[in-house]
Image (cartoon, rainbow, N blue to C red; front, side):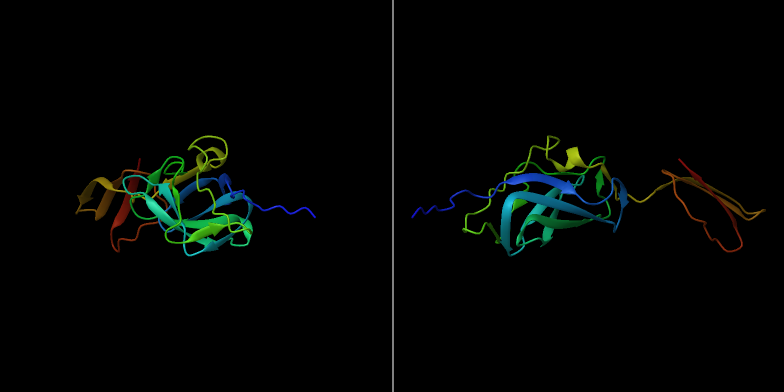
Amino acid sequence: IVTTNDTNSPDVLTVTSSTTDGTYDINDIVAVNVKFDEVVTVTGTPQLTLETGDVDRAVDYVSGSGSDTLLFNYTVQSGDVSGDLAYGGVSALALNSGTILDGASNAGILTLPAVGGTGSLSNSSALVIDGVRPAFTGGAVTAGTKSLVLSLGEAVSGTPDAGDFAVTVNSA
């Protein structure tokens, strides 16, 4: 009789997103998937830290226990900015008092692919984060004709409603 014991820890293979490439604004949700080389079981709420400008965001684990891919949902917050969403480095995945184990109870190796390298989020996806609200850069009011001209620092869409005023919005 031959018996073998699994002593190999599960390793992270890739970090990707199932969210379509594009630009995401405040309150948009971006799905981030961490794929291991084998099925893992999760307890607690591991976290993945994303590079989102001045304040990095620790994103909670959502689902995937019992599979090889764990889901983390990131909600864009005011002030978040990234030209190409990435995580905070090879050690950006943390247990946060939880566990990630394989079927033989081997602890997962949490080292992520190098940021920008093969298998990394920023290499596999083109996710632009724009959590900065447009700012007024200038304005003019003409009382005689009841007109109001507003200038914004970036392009905006929609139709402004200013009651009796005729409103013109100039976007950068």
